Structures are given as structure tokens and as C-alpha cells.
Image (cartoon, rainbow, N blue to C red):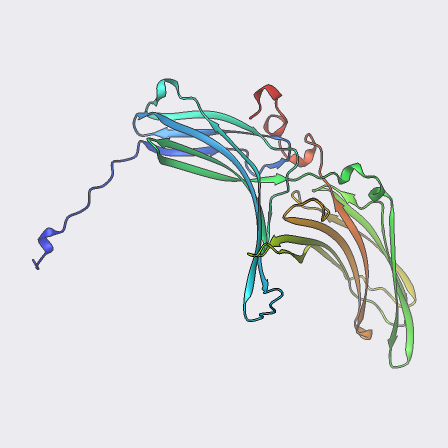
Amino acid sequence: MGEGEGCLSTPPQPPMSAVKSIELVLPEDAIYLAGSSIKGQVILTLNSTLVDPIVKVELVGRGYVEWSEEAGASRDYSRNVICNNKADYVHKTKTFPVEDNWLSAGSHTFDFHFNLPPRLPSTFTSKFGHVFYFVQASCMGREHILAKKRMYLLVQGTSAFHKETPFQNPLFVEAEEKVSYNCCRQGTVCLQLQMEKNTFTPGEKVVFTTEINNQTSKCIKTVIFALYAHVQYEGFTPGAERRSRLDSSELLRQEANTPMTRFNTTKIVSTFNLPLLLSVSSSTQDGEIMHTRYELVTTVHLPWSLTSLKAKVPIIITSASVDSAICQLSEDRALPVNPDHQN
């Protein structure tokens, strides 16, 4: 045995925790509409008796955006400045009463419900921003956290756009391009996009008709339909200067490979099925950390003229009522509760 080896000893191990596990029981894959009720259970399993426990559950909703850009007025392009912003949307806590201030070994079930505020942004994630909601259960004993469990929620936000009627009018957009091909030959391609309405709720079908009038001697082979989300992030520099950043992403895409013959008109009826969870359309005056708008774009590619023709229509995504089917929950899971029992 070498010098000093006889002094080594194994540090004492902490006693086994009285808490075996803590679990949250919530509807699987539920989408909660802002203003609805979240109902669930906390199941606490103990190895032994626990004296003076604090068992609680929290509902938390937060948003955060961050990006880097070149330094401002100094024009110091050798360094970047971090722009960020954050928001707290909801924070509610329920502490469960414990009879006689002790719990015996075994499993204990605690029922809870929370009412979401009526105006919330949707759950969202991107490379620049996040909006997230979670329910967290915890058990404490003598000021130490013995166990903790967190489950993230999907929340569909709300907006006031559904109260406005002008967006519901039938829409007609037309674009025309004069093209040259085969050296000196010319022609026109006319693109028309028609919709009965452009205001939708998440999960709804978007139906639109595209008509292409090809007045050239060339065949058109490809038409692309795409739904874009344009998100404007609002942040501040460390010096409290307000900054914005716009980021666009393609949510849905279809490609029509029906040949559009020369000197002919082709009509295409298309359908997009919107995701069940979407950020609602918002204006830049809401004071939020991000604002979202949507755009339906039809693109006709004309490779023989090195050009393309586009028609664009703004799409409005609105909220639904609390008892709408978009909540995707049964009545006993997500409907508002009696005000006398609200948390």
C-alpha cells in the first residue's frame, strides 16, 4: 500500500429519498386553445413516510427571441451585437393541501386544473424565437426539492382578426409576363389566382384555383404552390436600441406537373391542409416579441426565358372559439370551468 492510500475512504452516501417518483398525467398530444381549461393529475409515489411535504404544480408560459447582427452606428463590422427580447405570458401555482402535514408510503394522487388566459400566442419554435408552455409538478421537504417533473404543452393562440369581415371577400389576383424566346419570338403568360376567402383557422382546408393562359409556342411544365410564414422578431440591443428582424419559411408546398400546352389555358384546383397548430396573424402594433403574417404564392417557371411569374395572396390565420373542434379535446378536458373553481 503506497503512502497515503490508507487514508482514503468512501464518502457517506445520502439516505434514500422518501420520494420514489412524481408523475404528471395529462391528455396525450392535446392542443389547448387559449382561454380553455387544463385538467390533469399529479401522482406522487413515496418510499417512506414524508413529514411536512409541499406538493405543488405550476403552469408557465414564456417567449424569447434572440439573434446577432452587425454593430449599429459605430459600423464596427468586426463584431456582432446580440439582440434579444422576452415575455412572460402566464405563471400560476397550485399548492395541494396535505392532511395532518404528512404522507404515508405509497402513491398519492392530486387533481388540478388551470384556466389559460384568453389572449396568448401559439406555441412556436424557430432558430430565432420560441414561445413555450409547460406544467411542472414538484415535491419539497424541509426546503429541499425532492422530485420534479415537467411536461410541455401545445397551445393554440387567439386573435381578433375573426371579427373583421373584409378579409372574407372572394379574391382575385392576376399577374402577366411578356417573355422572349428563340431569339426574336415573343409571347405572354397570364397567371390568375382565385380564392373564395383568405381567412382561415388552423386545421382548415385552403382551396384555391389557378388559371394559366400560355400565349407562347412553348410548353409550361412546372407550377409551384407554396404557403409562406413571414415572422418579424422584435428585440433590443444591450444599449436598449430597438431592432427588428424578418425571417421567412415555407410551411406547405405542392408541385403541379400537368403540361400546359402552347396557346392554351389550363385551370388547376389545389388544396392545402393547414397544420392544427399555427401562430395567428398579427399586426406590428401589438407590442409582442414577434409578429406573423402568411402568404400564398403560385410560381410559374419559364426556364426557356430565364424568368418566372408569381401571384401572391395574403392569408389570414385567426383563432377559433374555445369550444371549437380545433382544440382537439373532449369536453371534459378543455372546456372552461365554473368561475367559482378557477385557478
